[in-house]
Image 1 (cartoon, one colour):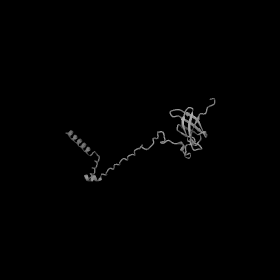
Image 2 (image 1 turned 90 degrees about the vertical axis):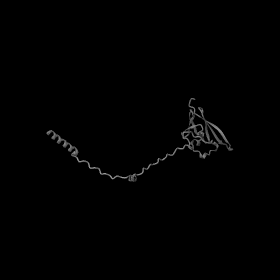
Image 3 (image 1 turned 60 degrees about the vertical axis):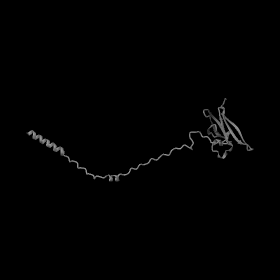
Image 4 (image 1 turned 120 degrees about the horizontal axis):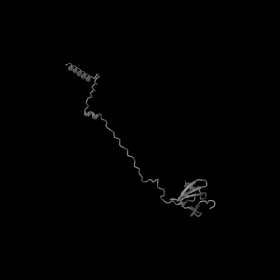
Length: 172
């Protein structure tokens, strides 16, 4: 019988310890008053959706392709060019001041000319050169052919071709 009494005491102590646990039980959470559905709708703020700004489209019409070579829409009459409006330094000097330094042959033939001050320019077929409205017509291994238009004393427009050739080295 002592066994049963001691067993009952142990079980009762275990129950008391586990229920109280020596710790204070947490205080019950304060109950919030229930909110009706109508009050919830009033408290909800509307969500503002920002519209995406459309990027402007790139319009190609009316613009020149920067990777294409520049060509004049109408051909230029060399006799009608006003000498006071010339901005290219090659058009301001005479052909006697220009010396042919080198020729580059390839898909597009090019030539290197140098003026008397030592400034060099690369020219191609169609380049405007010289005071008398000269234009490069041909670049070959022998030299550069320039066609010049000028007015004579009677007011007639004459044309002459000038060939710039490479300076021969000693012994040739």
